[in-house]
Image (cartoon, rainbow, N blue to C red):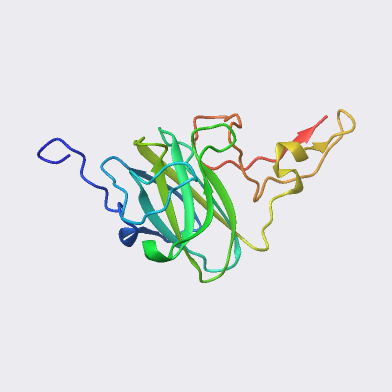
Length: 193
């Protein structure tokens, strides 16, 4: 808070002040309380003009898949991924407002080695709150299992039949029931009988 009782802008309020993420798996906490939009800043999540955006950046050290979400945030978020270092040269790569019926956001994109990506989280409309940004990078050789999605569940033909499988490199989906109150990234593989 400032002396006038207003929220101070977070350190990563502007694109030029993006916080660098140096890990391939991260669960980051922050807030967009006191954050502002910038001149020439694009609309995030294809729904809301920028009013309280905060920024991170991440560089791919090799080719693969990057998964980002705001699951665990306590307000309706938007999430956009860009290439570029200034508002004038930002190139939208991927964006999301509500991930599969939730008010948090989720994107997955293929990334190229050596490329730096700008990550913007904002609130839908003028919403603000506590942000949870979850990041997972999977190197190109690490593909999720075939039954990563509920719609691709593998059939078990007979009760008592043993099945082989793994949830290594699997992902979680929005609205997926949690075993605990963990709001981070899930790794779920699916079977049916």
